[in-house]
Image 1 (tube, rainbow over the protein chains, first blue to last red):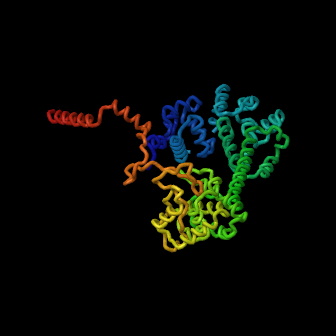
Image 2 (image 1 turned 180 degrees about the vertical axis):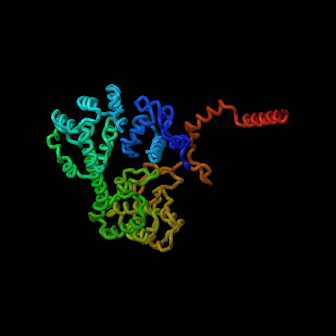
Image 3 (image 1 turned 90 degrees about the vertical axis):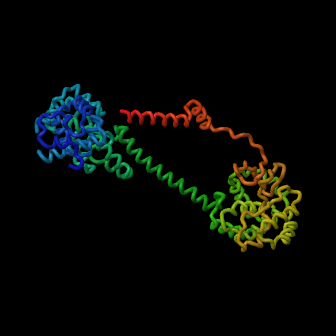
Length: 90
Length: 406
């Protein structure tokens, strides 16, 4: 519980199911909207991208930056969130 | 998970295209058709063969966006990076990664090594088609190396010019350099008429031209022969005993000036110089005595207040005949006057609050700086500070009262 947000903890606590992309830590309304326009409308789609990139941090962060113009902190939050979810459930 | 793999494939063609455009991927229509049709589960062999037939394989290095998926993957592997599946959504990222790797490698490797990489497997045919992107990277890498080499050579040259050609240092030299230089000058000093002296005078000339702070250089060459004897005497003896005179950089100007003088005034008035030398040779550097003697001897010259720069240690006595007459602060040296070195210094404005200095010039009021003017304009408009303060107090009292009453 050191530096994770509530959103992060909520996301990691359970399987994501059909949660929207805005449930991801670091992804708010604006970024969520951009991702949805790109076709990543559900959290699991983003998870898919994360897995296709083989959970590589640099690539995933670059991808986030390119697709929804996330800043460094948002990238980091999202990456950590997904990584932890995968560690727990995948 | 098959679901995920098909997801991107289910995107419409237009959306896919827009994604590609967003990722700055060049659209090779054939590739897109392949991808859409095959839905990412097609045989890789088919793709490779088709593309190999349709389009001669490009060099991998030049254009990551022109590479096939497999080529891109191979290129990334070659750089030591193990990529995941290269699909629509990941392709742009891997291209970017490859570019980054190429750029970093381009800096590290020389051109020869890069050529080795280029010649690997498929590229021989495609050297013609090397795209600008990669060439720019390689060339920029090469150019940077060349620039670095050029810079280094440039840096080396000034260093060597300092060492090779005598030197053109700044005015205030450290004492060690002065000593070294003095020792060097000592040798030619007996041979005043030698070419060395002239050469060194010329060399010292650019040095002295760097003297800062209001010393303006007149036509020294013309004036030098007409100089008084005192200065020359001082300069000669000082130059002769140059080595002992350096204790601090403060001497450097006067010392250099003296040496210039000594160079310039070789032949002329040597006799008078020596006479003067004899009379002053024993004097040490005390201000008053030195002030007197030049006045007596150089009555023709107006600059009577010659003084040596410091009251320095006694070991310098015997070598302190009057120095080159630094322009008196109390007198402005007119251009018509000739100084031994031809250096003129104009008096600076007296410092505000300078104690006891007679104000020679009535300077006009200092012009106000733009910021001062602006500030004044602004302040005129704003409410003055004391009124503001009063207002603040009044409001505080009112509020306090209100608070109390409520």
